[in-house]
Structure formats: C-alpha cells, structure tokens
Length: 334
Image (cartoon, rainbow, N blue to C red; front, side, top):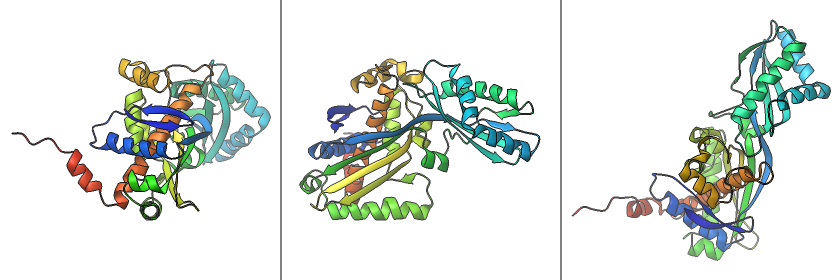
C-alpha cells in the first residue's frame, strides 16, 4: 500500500502489486507531497467502453450508405434499442462509423456500470449488427473487433476520443514541500518536465506517452485490484503537465483519456484483489451503477500523479540512480 493520499477531500490508500524496486516508496513520497499541498482533485470527463466491429459491403458505395444511415439520429435510436435489449446496465452512448473501401468500422461506445464492460459491449455489438442486417441484407461481419476499438494496442483514437474512464487530476504543491519532501526546486522540476515529458516525447513520436512512467503505476494498481494488466497499453495514456504558479508553488496535472477499469467481474473477485478494492471503498457494484468503477479510476490517476511527481523530482535533482542503488539491491550476504 502507498499513501495515504488526499484525493477529492478524502484520505485514500493506493494498493499496488509490483516487483520494481523503489516504486512503492517513490509513489509514497509523491502521495506525501500531494497531501502536504492541496490534495489531489480528480474529475472524470468521459465514461464509455468501446468496441468496433468490422463489417463489409459488396461495394464502397454501399458501405458509404451504411455510414450515412447510422449517422441519422432516428437510426441510432434503433441501434441503441437493439444494443440495450441485451444488458441490464449497458447504455449505448455513441455509434461512430468509419469507411475504408468496402469496410465499415463501427466504433460503439457504451456505459457499462461498474463492469469494465468488454463482454457487455461485445454482446450488445452483435445485436447492433443484426439490426443493421435487417436494413442492409448484404452486410457481412468480418470481425467483432475490427481494431478501431482499440483494445490492448497503442492507438491515436483512444488518445483523442477516449476509452473507458477519461480522467484529469491536479494538485498544487507548495514550494517549501517541493524543497523538503521532493528535494528539488519548482523551476528545476518544471524545466525537466518540459524537456523530458513534452519535447522528448514529441521527438520520439509517441502516442499518449507524454509522461515519465505512468504505465508503472497503472499496472501496479491493475494487478492489485484484479484488472486486465494487458490493458495498461491504453490505460497508461497520459500527459503530465507542470507549471510554476504566480506564488512560486508547483501545479501538476495528469490527463488520462483511456483508463479501463471495473470493480465487478474478471479478477476483481479474487480474495486479495477484492480486499484491495474494499480498502479504497470500491468493492463490487456501487449504490449507483458506475460509482465504484469511477472511484477506482480516480485512484489510478492519483497513483500516476504521485509517481510522476516523485520520479520527475528525482530526475530534476539527479538522485534517481543513487536512490535505486540504496534501496533496490539485495542485502550483501555474510
């Protein structure tokens, strides 16, 4: 457990499972700095898992006709009715078709309650295809997942449009805390963040990788809480921003458009993982569908921001290697 960290006005511990030395200790330092400052304020700006079946028509013209038909509001309601006939909690939010020759990639977005939602949306997607076939008999389903979802692969569509929970989190750290807890200065950490996470990542041509090591904390929390660790590919999409405030303090934010989490189903029922979800107040289904999954997304974002803060401080003060040498080595055997 790392923390506690003050998150949306409450003291929360962060469950982590990792074999990387110093990660929990580093995250703990970030949590301390955040709590010594304003605390973390996290907001969910989007909530919807996606699936994008690939369907094929005899001609590009017919594929275009399907696209135009789907975009009519009245026709979307037909797809929505078909989708929601398969689920108690799922709600179809959006249907976004893209044409490539004779193919139509139909990116469906659905609210999935406290489930991560892949099974739910896959089942609903089949019903949508049957609805389309009733109006376009020449449709053939190539693949239930046409890779525009996009699941477990780096993709600009997730970075731009979002997938799962889209979260923005921020905190203000007093300059005195930056000096005493993070062992660096506000100008130094801001400059390091710009040159590493923004310029360096741009030069590398990354998609969603404008951060120091978001995947570390995402994966650690995923393993501890029974999530699908392979989905760290898109869930770790993050841009970390740091600025010096007019008062000389440090403002930090992490924007994460595609955190894919659930608190029911999959590995969330395993004893250890269920216990970790209970610790953060997000075990099972929420009083209101989706509340617990959203709480878990907030915790993931807080873990990432704490990790970003601590690692960037270590890089700004050039203490990273020394810390690993001191804390990430086996004791010398006698």
